[in-house]
Length: 330
Image (tube, rainbow, N blue to C red; front, side, top):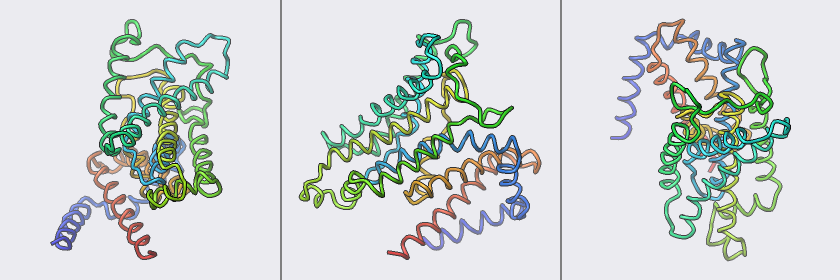
């Protein structure tokens, strides 16, 4: 039954894409050409790749100990909220040190929010998948209430806060665009996670816990500590992504200012097979598909729904290939 379902689905999608002219290799190449070799397309790719990579790291770190963090979206919201409150209350003479402080508060907000599923798991054996997923919606509502009430800018036509001062904004990476240096920090964090996994005792302990918590417990490894620390570190990455979204791109905290980066991070993490450096590539791939698709839809008379369907099929194909390759090596 399952092979027939796959074959039927493939035939339907193949016929649809062929009818729309989406099998033309030039269309596929145009998507990535506009995402990487067009100046403004590259800027959009950079803008999107940073938060996707941060949220992917928020998945990879707990995944090392056998946990799945689906709460990157909510942790981004809390990170952006923490950074905004900090930025709006800092004195003017703080200078560029304020950027570091806003980032740290954003990271701490993400840590606190990520530890909630961890504590519920350790104390009540509640599924971290469900609790982290549900906490996303609570975080969205918290930010919606705050930006439409206590922190709403005076005379604002819709919910948003006052503007972040210019001395607290991240430097631009490409002049004349909104691309900022947050993506460089994200890549550096991915390298740090790789070193942590590969060369540290804590990384080995997390790997042991992920493979067999019972055996790790008998070996003297503190399983609870590994789980909570890995979730906290993942929350810090997502919190930084939220902070950078505010101080690097939007300069205000808006209602619903995050659009699916947490869930894109889950896809990027699994496309990268949980490897930090491969996840860098998968994050840029997803970001390029997003930015390139938005540009080619105007040139090829394609709707955004068709582009999203096209992107989803590419992701499914890559995921199936990686799963098959990994399974053949076992």
